[in-house]
Image (cartoon, rainbow, N blue to C red):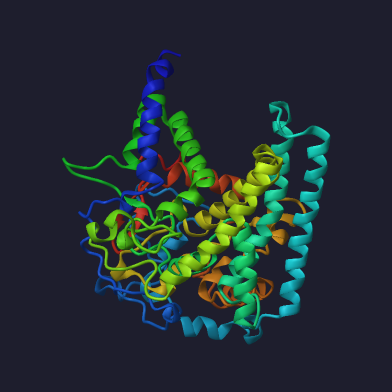
Amino acid sequence: MVKYQNGASSVIAITLLGNVAAFVPSSRTLTSVRNSRVTVRSSILVDSFKTDEATPVAPAEADAAFGSMIDPSGIAFSGLQGKALSIRSSDIPSFAEVKSVIPQECFKPDDLVSFGYLSVSAAATALCTAFGLQLVNLVGTTSLLTLPVWIAYALVTGTVAMGLWVLAHECGHYAFSKDKQVNKIVGFILHSALLVPFYSWQHSHKVHHRYTNDMDRGETHVPERESVGENAAFDSAQARNFLIEKFGKETGLNIWGGVQGFFHLIVGWPAYLLLGATGGPARGMTNHFYPESLFDSKDRNNGVEELFPGKWKERVYQSDIGIAFAAGALLTWGFSNGFDQVMALYGGPLLVVNAWLVLYTWLQHTDVDVPHFEPNDHSFMRGAIHTIDRPYDKLDPWGIIDFLHHKIGSTHVAHHIDSTIPHYKAAKATEAIKEKYPQLYLYDPTPIPEALWRVCRGCAAVVKRGDMWVFDNKGLEESI
């Protein structure tokens, strides 16, 4: 008890400081020390995101046999058992080669089928909302005693409504309909209703696809580099180590994991929209409602890319119109019926939707033995191949959640290789990729809650190993 009492005041400060380092990595702060090596073009050509570019091959690895792994010391293993670390850049086929093994029918959206899935998600969400309105009459929304009821309602309704988010995401990739205007209209309405600026997100998400697991140009969940030397900055690895020293290995890791889980799942999505949290340094601090980098951070970071170049600046403001309408409707509702009702019926479920979104994005591209890459070592295909499929179909005994979420997490490798594949054809594309490239396809069978907890505890800062940046868990390998 003495040990815990003495550390109580310290842990509050250290976890908050560590979270600033880990959740909003120093990769997007206003320092420029490690950003001088960013060498990227001044604008992003959206039409070139899918590319046949040759994957860069470092001379030292050009003759390395497939399956040769980097030094694994200090690296904890996930259910992938280090498979991602054994994929060399010379092993990775071109986009055209991989696309050629996927049946052509997989690239053709069927509007009738897409609207069928939209009807299911919309009807299920409406049914939950109707039940919520009955709850308002039965138990009210003002008493704290009803909080467990509304938490349960939020968990169910938010989980169901996540299906609408996924379909809006599909619209952003023009995979919902053959007609681009239909994609834009449906995506704009659905995302605006969920307080997501559609066009702003559409572009930043394409950037995420183009630069998946790029240490400088990646758009989400970019880890920070571990600080070393006498003038080392306080980073997330040091914050985690402090907690371990203060409370012991297991308790310290649990505190760290809890803090990371909370800030990512609860705070993460709005922090990304407002500040570009967890993005790489190439674009500085960004905002999805205002198209310029914040506080001149791009220039101070020696950044040479804009997140919203050219025509996308106007589209950011077009997105804001949808958000303004949604926010106006919520304010009108709140002034009419009380903001406690708004939070109970809308705010709680929205938090759950956002948590699902972050969960998917985080676990699709992050684990203790999944590497990131410097810009010179990165390629579109290298990022896509290092995407992870997971057993979301086993989250419940009947696979209901995976069905409601349109299999976004269990077929995500295929989605990152070609995002124009509709979700209802992604399983077939996944099977084709698995069959042709079993040594490259990444599937981690770890149950989702266990995988999330491992990532929360084990993914702090990264160190350089060859042409990869890997999470450093030296001394913690067996505990993660």
